[in-house]
Image (cartoon, rainbow, N blue to C red; front, side, top):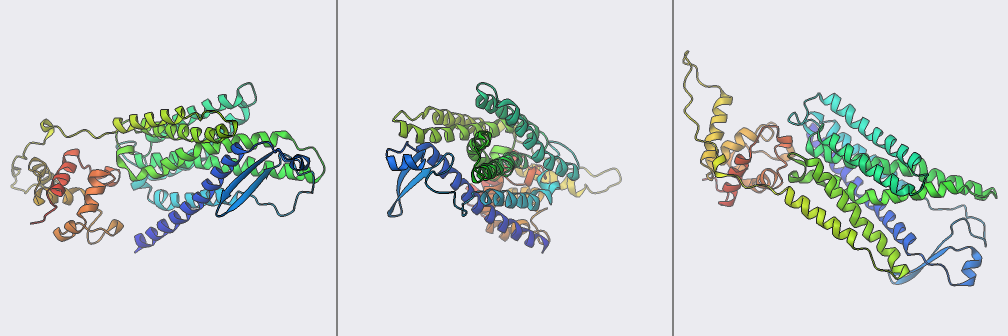
Length: 430
C-alpha cells in the first residue's frame, strides 16, 4: 500500500512538473522570439513615447502590437500593475525537486546507487546528489561573475560553462547509476536556471524599477547581467529537457562512456536551439538563417545514435549447456541459487521456448514482480501473468533495457535475447 501512495505522489508531482515546465519554457521561448524579432519603430508617435522596438503579430483571429521600452515610457509613469514572469520557474523547480525526492532520494539504494558503477551507501549518494545541485550553481555563478567582464566575455563564459558541464557529466556518470546520472545532470542545470531567475534576473529588475520610480538613472549592470543569465537559460533548455526524458531510454544511459552520449546530445540540443534563436534575428535583418549550427547538431545526434547502437550477440558468446551439478560429498543437494543459475544458463543455451524465457524471468524479474511485491502493479510469477505482461516485459527488458532497474539482478545480453526470441515467436506459454 505504501508503494501505491508513492506512485500517486510520483504521478501528481510529474503532472505538475510537466505543466509548469511547459509554462516556463513557453514564456521563455516567446520572449526570446520577441527580443530577436523587434524592429525600430517607424512611427514618430512611438519614437516620442520612448519605444525602442516593436513587433506586429497575428494570432487567434486578432492582431497584436508589442512595444518594448528599454528604460521606461516617456508618455506616462510606470503602472503599478506589472506582470512578472517568475512563478513558472519557481514552480517548475519545486515540483522537480519534489519528484527527485520521492522517486530517487527516497529509493536511493535502488535508483541512485549502482554497485557496478560505484559501491557506496545510499546516504552518501543522497548527500552527494544534493551537494552536486548546490556546487554546480556556485561554480557556474562564479564563472559568470568573474569571466564575463573582459573582452569577448560572453564567449569566454560560454566555453567555461561548457567545460563545467562536461566535468560534471563525467563525475556523475562515474558515481551514480546511469539513469540517475543523466537526471542529476539535468537537475543541476535546471537548478542553475531557476537560481538565475531568483538571484539575478528578478532582483535586478526590481532594483531598476525602484530606481526609475525614484527618478534615478538605472544602473545598466542589472540589465546586462539579467540578459546574460536569460540567454544562458535559453541555451540550457533543450539539454535539460533531454536529460529529464532520457531516463526512459536505457540504451542511452547504460554501458560504458555514457557520459559521452550525454554531452553529445546536450551539445546537439544547444546548437539546434542556437539556429532557431538566430533565425528570428536573421528574418528581421534580412540575412541568411545560420542553419549550419542545427546541421552540426543533427550530425552529432547521428553520431550518438550510431555509437550507442546495440551490438548483435555473437554466436561464439553463447553460454554452453550447464553441466549436471554433482552432489556434494555429504550428499547435500545443490543450493537454490546454484540451481537457478544453472537453469538460466541452460535457458540461454536453448532459447526460444517459454520454458527458456520463464527461467530468465524467474531468476531476473520475479524478485520485484511477485504476489507480495508488485512494482508498477506487474506480477510475473505465473505463466498467465507473464503472457498478460509480455509486451511490457519485452519493451522494458529488451527494447529499452530499463529493467531490471540498474540491472540489480545481473541479467545478461544473452538472456535479453532469450526474451526477444520468445516474444518474436508469438509469446506463447504452451
